[in-house]
Length: 304
Image 1 (spheres, rainbow, N blue to C red):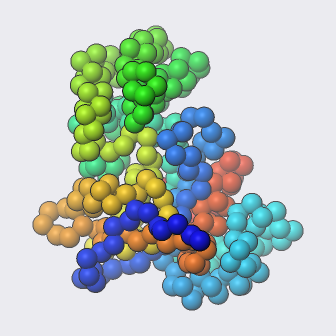
Image 2: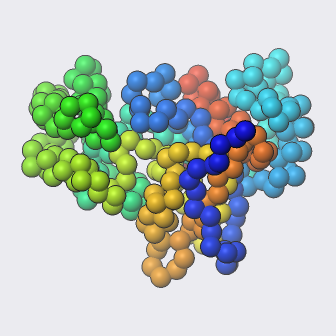
């Protein structure tokens, strides 16, 4: 017996105005474990196919609903030909949002410790300071220690493991600052008081701060903004994803709203991929895109 689907934010009634319906799935998601993983990139794919179109596409590719997986797909003898057919069928009907997990953490450092963290920050491009700080990757071990210390400090259950980890993070900040250049200038602005204030807010359960180690919210925000194109509302059907709780989605929905108009996120409904061929196609596309990135062949479809 299947467990009930968790999360989602179904629309209250039929959305008014221009609406596009999309189905989404991801590949490479590793929960809050952003660094200890063999998958450095998350790909979040979306398609605007109807159920009938998705069924036809799966059949055209010679697949069954139980074998729509990128690994098996790309190992086929005719993989390149099949991939070409897939991409031709999805031209103008699909989107892939790419998130580099390491850079996502850098974004979180900047948003939390230099700005005013909010769900609105998920809807904006990365701040210049994030790109400056990312240059410190050349520091090798000090860079990894810095990212590890930040992730440990903001992890939800950090107190159970014995403290906030702020001291460790501050020491890692100082060690990394020796790299000099633009990154050191960014690190110099991360004050002890600011770190203490943010840790206190996280410890108090301040829900106005997006969960720092949940990239799926950022991926969904980028996906909705793409499909909305500034004039449509987006109704999402998504494979079950624990990060997309109703409370978080409601906050993201408000953050995406501009002016007095309705939010571009009309609602999000969870579905089991085994029951929805549109999600199966999105899953295939996400997996193909991630694997192609890993091979250094680039993304296979429009991405951000």
